[in-house]
Image (cartoon, rainbow, N blue to C red):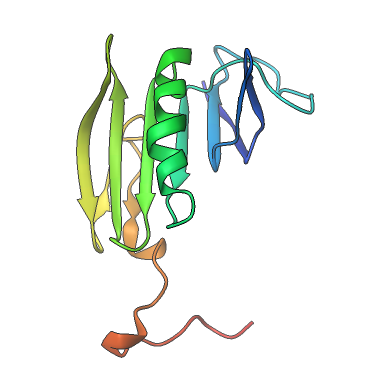
Length: 136
């Protein structure tokens, strides 16, 4: 079992080139870690972190490509809304399996055996009087 994870891997799908924020490949499918400047094998899971400048590209351009290429699971993190959306690939389209938010502790597919504390993903909200990050 196990996974290979890469941050911002360059994926080449024919003429389309995309760079997800994080992507993972199951070791059963990709036994050795890829050692190339780009990858042509679609990941089993990926995560996109939305920002105002990338929202359209991530949702309207990249997600259809990921579906076309056979990515099984996609996570969309929206730091502004403090949400995590879990998508599962179905034959014709993505199916939104779950939506989590705030400070939930979640078990999200395909990593549902591991708890993920969403509070660790968000920047402190200074408007609510939360302290900033700890000093180094």
